[in-house]
Image 1 (cartoon, rainbow over the protein chains, first blue to last red):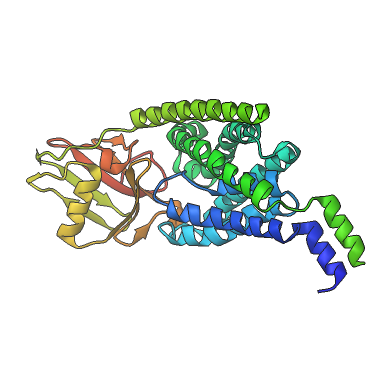
Image 2: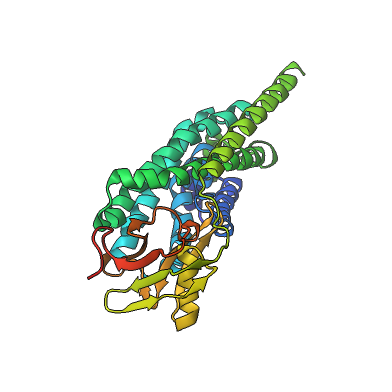
Length: 208
Length: 148
């Protein structure tokens, strides 16, 4: 691989350690969701997306939620929901994709403030609460449009039915964000301290 | 050293606050959960399964399958038609996805149930049935109206 390519990959995806953490987040999102499949709204895609933006930044903000869902969605749709029309599946998938992308982008906004400190874990956990509610509201819009409305249900009906599921989703975020956030921050900041942009720029200059 | 202690203190306060929040939220979701149906003998229950182009009627003299889901499964065994469902652990409950080959979503229709004309607003295995109840499983695109 020539220096120009290495430099481009470095700019987009960071150094080897950052790329390893990115792959680890994708694995966390996929495996966590599959293992917790029977526990509706207990999932790890949310925390993987949030951490991708707030820890890794760069293209991982987009790649982690997109790659995780690209692997998960076909599996989940084929396990129990395979009768749904393709338009409904694609429509609901759009809301899920954009919802998690939004989570990653909000995480990216917080990146400068996320360090290996209790305050950072508390910040991520606190932010995860309104973010989980916002994500659920957004996907409720999709559920209303593609499933509930054709059945004669109102958006208010959807919100009422969703309340208990959002409570479970909040529980999921309150448990997984500090749990995996602490672990990943430790790996990111202490064990596999990743090179900073200025270090990468220096490496790029040396290569060329 | 002072900074490290401060971090530990912060960590303890954070874990304590988080534990209280999680426990409170967990208590709320547990309290919101409809109670499990206790198995109990019921008489004169009538089950109708309306798939649009087909219909099954089932009326056992007595049964201990006293939930909207359990009576459906009993009929499934009695008549030999398949029922597909997803069982969730949290929240506890089943979600019926297909009966006798008719799957949710096809033509915008979904399996929904009514007990004595009242729309099922909880998971079918949490919807208790009593003596003389009429259970309807209807493959429909709307929750309004009744089968023709």
